[in-house]
Image 1 (cartoon, chains in turn brown, yellow):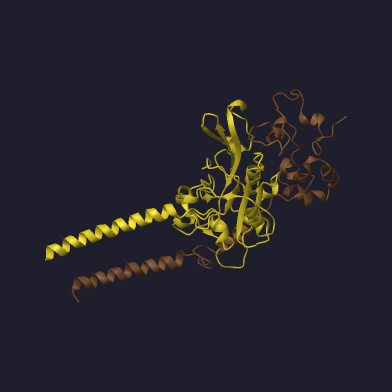
Image 2: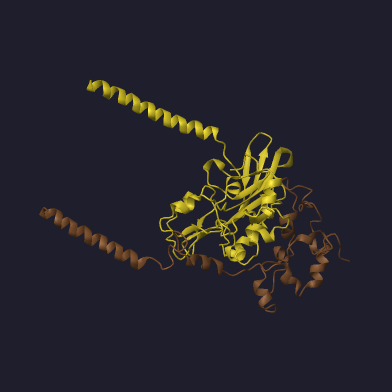
Length: 150
Length: 255
């Protein structure tokens, strides 16, 4: 074997050797467990905090409101749609209060008249014309909006 | 003699090339794009294989899905980062199409076109399509994004190097680089919820049940029933991504 080939072979062996050592050292342990990714990533994704707890959890304490809501058109509406995620509130209700939205715009997010909304799907009002001076909840009961406040 | 063979081989070569390209062209035109590709042709396995259904007829454009997604998954509140958002399509009487999505719809939609100029208007909620042949998974140089055995495309944020290839590769614009973590972020189909048997936040919060999430392998399941009863389409079927997000009443104008 010629001298230069020998030298080249040595250089290549060293380069590949270093490459495999680095690859072995840097490759995470769970890599390739299920596929071309870190198997642990599945568990990390699973362990994130659940923040929207669902109406059943609200029903544990606020059963009066939940059952009252069932009498009206908001029957299928989850409490957390308007009040925000409740995971902190169910841990410590006193310090972690939920949002009680009162602005007209908040109701308008669903009920503002819009050509893309079908009348069959949702009751709509034109917020720019309908009783502009007042808040929606001055007249309507939020949990059962076809009933009016005295 | 030699000259002759050379000539005929060149002709042969050109013929073969023409045949191959022509054949490819013809087959791509004649073979229709199958919207239900991923629903009808599932990989083998027994675990659930998740898909999503969105009923555009039922969507009221409240974008509570987009809001709930931001709350549940710590997505930055700035109007630039979305895992899930809602677009309003307005087709005007003069044929012009306007697409609007102010802050992803989270602060509500205000109609910019007067009623008399509108031919048709509708909302299109968008999110990750959880493709079964994901372009984003294919381009990741380090294996930081992958498809779980349930068919959910996830990101390993501890391993991602933030190169942004996947952001460019996604034909649906469903990825972004998280401004604090500097890694790619996308819809995980609320993997932390579905693995505990709870529906994803956007599905749970939808006030009009316009969003359906289910197991494509369960023939009696809600999603398969939805696909059978409605004419469903996927976005960009020509890209052959094997999208598992099926829309009912999707207009061709939607891109």
